[in-house]
Image 1 (tube, rainbow, N blue to C red):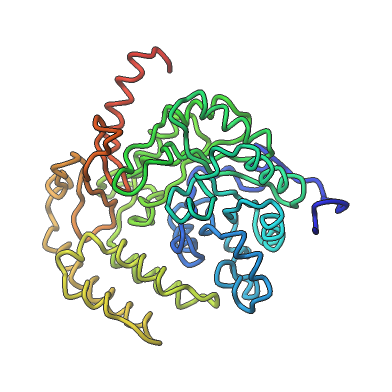
Image 2: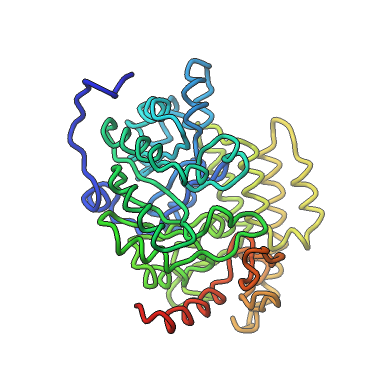
Length: 418
């Protein structure tokens, strides 16, 4: 097995040396998202403040057993075109899910010259991860996790990192994080939700557990969960002590999440909120300009998320997006986005002269602010409560940060801990 024994590996940086000298001390990180953090999206994200990005999760088993199948690997990480992992796609971390250390190492070896690190997914809570025995469903097999991480740590040219979910108790979460560090993980991303918190029971991420992890380990820690608006980034960093914030769904609905508002211009938050149709067009132009093929399922998913604030009103455009097929799909998508832009520009012109306060409304269920429907913004939807969590409000995707702050304040009043 290449790399397992007898192969000399050049010294590599780890921990904070790696974080500062290779990654450039990023604070704003785009999460690994299946069929959504693809190259074109990473290009767009970097234009608006993202300082580090992860690839979508790659299944190491499938990547390994299909290595001889022409074009298979290129669908997940296209090395031949030279754009993925190229100079404009750095810093970049490639994420794998796995349960076999040899398959994981072989797959990671294939990409190690085209990325800055390889990440192990220990957080996926979906049923496919349960049946495939990977992601968050490895949480109870610490020996296996240790072997997976340590094999990469000992045999790759680049560092290994890990993204994981928390346990019900702070104590076990901290113990788990320390084990990941001992195994060789050079950065830990702590998603402050339990394995059971998914789908309609997503709930709030626990920033207290992220803070405990940060205090317990010596490697950099990224915080994941409860980010809706740009102003939440500073709150999260202050509350957790984390080195960076990673965002998934909030960044999908607003790829300018990490960009600050324009100084002196009317602002709805500390961050930038631009017309979603403009972002859709910009993204589609990026897709057109790349040699690397972007899957049409990824493109369609992005368009429905980006323009969601208006698609419930502009139902004819929503229907057009749904029906578009064929070899000129991207061109037709651009046509829909341009029509959306014309309509949204008219709404924005009609609102000229109104104050920011007049343009903001409140979601009746969560109390969160809702921006004018022509702007990119987070999406949240209140859903039924989990039987195991009747006392918490449950919001799919982007969670109620205001609700979390209330909980967090009470928690620290009773526990006398900073």
